Amino acid sequence: MFDDLRDLYQEVIFDHNRNPRNFRIIENADRKVEGFNPLCGDRLTLYLQMEGDVIADASFQGSGCAISTASVSLMTEIVKGKTENEAEELFKKFHEMTTGKDENFNLEAIGKLAVLAGVREYPARVKCATLAWHTLDAALKNEQQAISTE
Ligand code: ZN
Image (cartoon, rainbow, N blue to C red; front, side, top):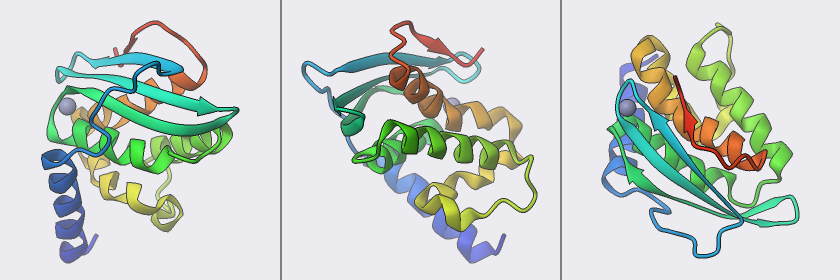
């Protein structure tokens, strides 16, 4: 990865960590699931408002490290307006990207989420980045119990 691109990615992560998007409670949310990453201590509560199978609104509360906060902030921005299937498809792509099993992963296909591609070089941080998505996955499957990455 080019250094200037890496700097840009870090800048986006810092920005989302400093000013998390959709950091609020949705009153009467259709879906509400808690996620916890015991390895790092990241905790979040994800709220979804559904209209049919479309995610009309997404928000979160909680506290965690910069990577987990940036990841859930970016995620709530990106899944808004997406159908459940589209969101699951993004989750799959994000998982492939962060676990780095595909050397030729197409970063352009994942848009803004590519800023978190760097975590695959730090296995201990992968769960920080994927916590939001595992929690979303549970929310879309309408599982009420808290999610833990362990
Ligand atoms: Zn973390």
